[in-house]
Image (cartoon, rainbow, N blue to C red; front, side):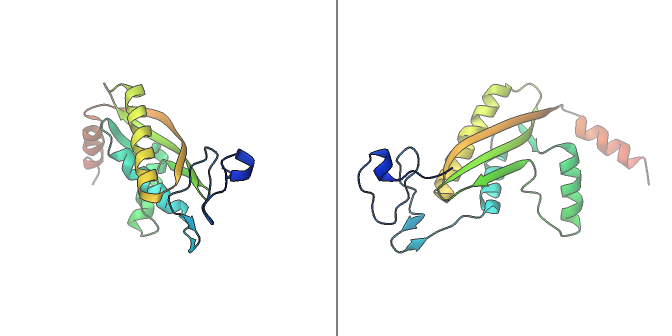
Length: 159
């Protein structure tokens, strides 16, 4: 995720203080002559998490174990669930995202994965100004209608 200078890429002289990405695009005002804006990993994680949940066909983010640990952590006030199933790498002008998702049974996995990718890229670039260089989607399970009902019934038998 290293930046390439305008001189080395043959793009001419950039605006003073403007960052230039590998593709020659200036980062949307993150570095200017007046100062720099940095975006924390947690911000990109939250944006990617919400953007993924906005896509139809996505049941959950994260593995069963990660969801269980996150749920317990949230109940005791240690942290939010918003980062489950999301891993990010954030540079000065770029971000890369890895997602782990559970998809609803019957949905086209390639179509849902592409919709996730497009929405995450659109949201990250629009909200943070970072260029989303890649969004990797790992589908780890399918959710079947009634799966949640079985879990609720089993837990209600024990008092």
